[in-house]
Length: 373
Image (cartoon, rainbow, N blue to C red; front, side):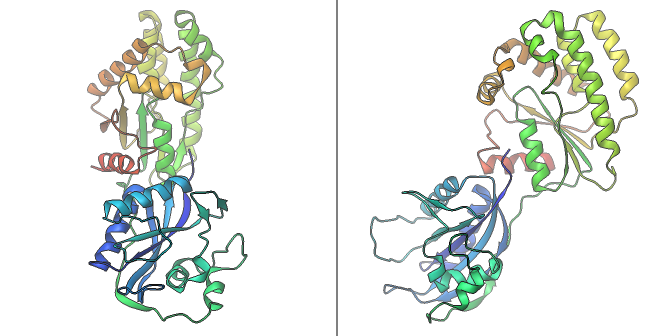
């Protein structure tokens, strides 16, 4: 899971309701690209290089998981949504909105489509003045000067004036939890979502350690033979991990998010084990887990079998490629039956079959809203 990257974006408008245009663009950037973590003052100044109305200009700091290329594409899409039609010309023109990607962390990129840092940012006071408000100490990775140093050494240009109105930072929101468990079928995206939440809300991340389980590849080849040793191995591993991880945190002060819950052991075991084996397994489970902490909220990410198989294929774990569809369907049914019987857990089912919260920011925000609702 890609960690968030800090990027800086310049906004400008000299047509229509200029203040409303900047505010609407900021809202779109929050919805489509990432959290708007800092905003500059809004400055007004004359059009440069052509005869036109005065501009409103501002800069914002954005935390995003998307690549620089995707951020640029999203900015162009936002401009189109707001009615701008870019023309193939070197001449300056009036514009309802102008969005420029200035810095993308410390990356230096030069392709036909994108140049970073922005090749003209150090020459323009209508960029440097607002950018210095929020990123004065940021160092240009090529020219080796800070934004403030560029501004101080800039040749005389038309003066900018700060207006009284301000843009507002916009950060994703999540209801306060001490312990949140994200569950789902194989390939549902529970680890991705738990990791994103942990990064965005400064939570302690607990992920299931199973990749080196020696029985897992064997199980997918011969389920009847290896089901019991596999489930017993998971039972012991999950118990030990949760005991270790939860004991390190203050359940009343820390925020923890886990990509699994202890009860998944029972769900998978019921699908894979024979009746006698499951009865023994359940007895051991109840002895081991009775005193472990329960999550404030148990979230089940439901995804249809077709999407699960697509996700499993994409992530490319060799031992998972032959998982049959009926096995995934049985696991889904097992989870849903388990959830119906829970009276001591607060449970929320979120259907993500039509969502892509990793690649579509708006889908991620929708999932957060459903968790908080």
